[in-house]
Length: 293
Length: 250
Image 1 (cartoon, each protein chain N blue to C red):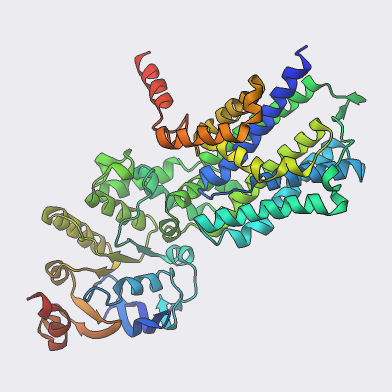
Image 2 (image 1 turned 180 degrees about the vertical axis):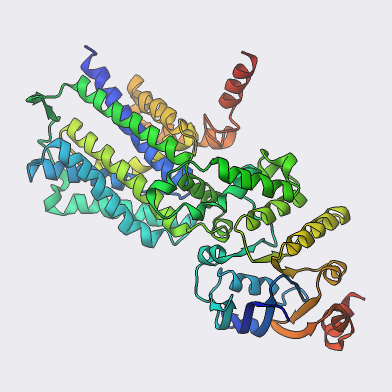
């Protein structure tokens, strides 16, 4: 048996890794900035929580539905938003995050500032899952998502995303339906964030609006940028490092935003492509080792 | 007379009250290289952006192979077989040459989720890409990132990419711009080769030598209006053209 504390950290880190991975689809692969990713994390968490506590749906139904609802909301917001570019998109997605957080906070149906409690770990074989089992479940889901990501990266969809990220106008002139592929990335990224939200809610057992605010969006974005935006494994490494940091040292927890901000500044100055970016010191070192062995 | 491919009728474009293009009409036939010249700001690139669907037109009509394409999106127009390059080159900088060309094959696989999540490295497509890359003289650069290549090669990438659409019309926006003499001459050979395959070319060019060499017909724009159309000889001796354009150069 692994200790409860360790398993809690591990699950939290995987939730962050899934979040970073899902934002990477939108921002890394398709090149669309989003400063409101936590909104879809929250939509997933609240959908799953309400379906479980209110409608009595089991975990196995509420979590997939959470992903679906987050994806649908992603489409509703994405279709109008993705027509604007870069800086406008950044502000619009930020706005979405504030609106969604306010909805959770001020509409009584969503539990207000007290949030929603009484969400439990899933049941299987007639008993509640242990935390270790839950960790393995979420790990398997994560691995499947990574396999899907690899498949997409090598597909015509992945190539269309890459062309849009590089140059929208040139992509259009090459027959790429830019709006459609942007929406596709946004919906996929949002629904995976929703899935993460569902897992998060059932693990924490209660959720509050603050878990899904703008600050959370920035934390997720930091992980992606820190690890290497657009790379497959970078955002995960970012989630692991930035997820563990607050746990190993209390002061870092207290000054989390400050530490992340400084780290991000340092990255932008010295390693703008991130830890695992194509031109980073780490990647070059790996290549050198691979070359010599 | 050849077969009519592109017919532009009374095409106009206003930007905030400024007339960038005013009632321009001309036609391009299958297989010809039609030169489009004019001083800076004459509306040449605006014309390309209207034909390729980047801007909506303020008035007029554009028909391609007998059908109106006005109001269509750029990706729809490119799929009909109108390829283009850009005045300021826009290759996909962080993709290698081969992948740059592959992007243009994507639209054949987009409809249907199963096809579009299939790998884009397919032997049949790669064979076609290989032939295109060879034909455009890009073979030595196949696996290099576009951003690391010189301007002349980037312009070739844009042409190769556009040819991958299997176009019947190519819009080339100043292909010789910024190139050294030999580079420019090589690119003109490529354009001639493309034209010999039966692909029509609309060629915006500032280099008069190039235009006079390549084109049998030339359209002259000035301040958004067409001021002349004819053979290189006719254009050379047209007093209006000399006044608007050639006269200033001499």
